[in-house]
Length: 326
Length: 287
Image (cartoon, rainbow over all chains, first blue to last red; front, side, top):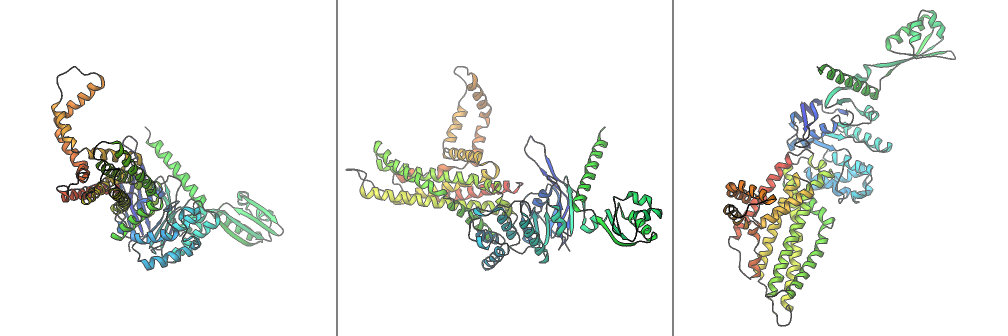
């Protein structure tokens, strides 16, 4: 089965002008998103997220490599039949009302008149815009425009939705609404690929993340795989034992390595630096006659993972540059 | 395909109408037509012909100005305001977008032309009934006037397509300047061969030239051997707008201009070629 999105060595080079240097937007991007996945696309500003998305939706012709949507070359308009797209900070014709806007996009998508009307009403209602359906977009708030953007993206029930920073600039309620809408799309069988700076949102809803740095994928995988690879600490709680008791059974080194040692009533709380140290502490607690009540590995958050990968890449780039010097 | 192009065209038309773009020009039309009356009073000879000539020129120039000012900014505005993003990400080819935009603008300039023509004919009809003044009669050749207006409309459509072409590659101000230059040179198409002949025949003799005159003379000397080829190239690229200037026939009450069908066919081919070029340029554009 063809992937929802598949790029091979995708390159995008911008030519600002005859005398200016060319700028590489994407440097051979390999990306695959399977059907029914909900994938978060991460990267700092200028890493190439929006460029990737623009190349996928036909706004930027690729300079090299290939990009396909459900097996069709993105340069062919028919590849976009299965696609719903919401740009970052979407803009719509200010002279049209919300209802007219959806009707206009429905016509571009080849949706019949009766279905257009029914679907537009349904979506305006779903995204809380029914009260402003006949108001011109000129008078809409940022949140309302963002919701209208989502409505037009799912108008023709696309198999794939590509959303560029859908939560940017929204208040917590707006972000929650967008998250919920994305979850609904996924439940309805739509593959969702979205970029975001808000890592907590990505962590909350995505199956898989792809991290981009300077136009290249530097990490990708399912969230549980990416984040379980690294345990940043293990919280332990034991009953009927003291720190002195643990020390007494020969675990002085492990105890000294703990980030936190606290006695409270008849309980001993420890924060071990990793799972190996935690396992040795569990043995010591048992030997000292205590009983273990809590063993909780604290996983790295997506944000911490993102910064660690980014730092490693920066170091790698600097190392590469240093090696390249004569 | 037709449905998508129609949706783009209808939206373009609706935007221009809702933005009340046309209203400003109605005021200008009224002012210019009244000015023609004033000119008729101060001119010597057939005052009726002066009014006809000035009125037709006003319909032509104002129609062309609307085409240029809206047409050159039309696609730039879509890119600047990023409304094109959600449109071009739909299953729509870029040429469909360009053609839709042109047709929408063509509808705008046509409506504007219709309104101006209607008021102009109404005005002439009133003058024909009431007369220009004591003892001065005024007659209109209805057929000639209608054909003159029809060719003014065709000229507006041709210039509008050029405005769209420049709008796909340059900023609105530059595009407006280029389109206006094309309009002006297109109107002088008949004079171009004469100019070339004079250039080829010139040079030599007289006092030695100095400063800028010497530079221009040197450039002309370089161009002189290829002047004929350059003329042919310009004649091919630039629209021959003199073909659509049949005002003289109307003013003098003459019948249809010779080869009128070929002139219309030329306009259709020219517009098609220009839109094709605009689509090719726009297809390569990174948004």
